[in-house]
Image 1 (cartoon, rainbow, N blue to C red):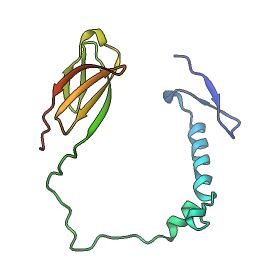
Image 2: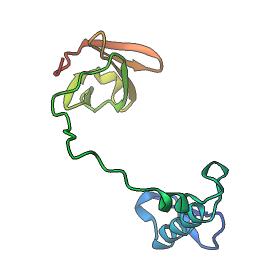
Image 3: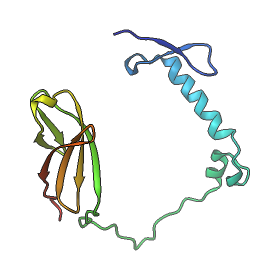
Image 4: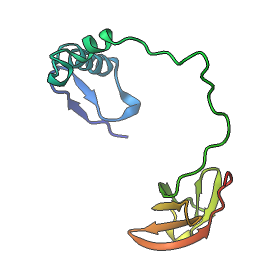
Length: 141
């Protein structure tokens, strides 16, 4: 694998563009950049304070002693949830620990899976075109 060196803004050393070859100097550079932005950048909406100064001035809010966290299952809201998945060599995609067959001719391609919670169905799209549609039973309905 070829690794290209790219320069980082404000630093004289180079950082590598692949995640597997990130030297310690890049991590130090990132920490060095992040620290001043939260400790030296003044925000007008925070009353002229830096984010770090604003956080130090806040009091920790505790829950009342009589508070009980709900433990029952929450209802699923009506709407859509979108997943991007790569079609396996067998022509299937996996979503939420379930496998769906899309077709071998689409292997290696990325499809958009749209779970419609109100209608209880899962749709697979490739380049905006509907490939397949399956009924999808929600477990906690």
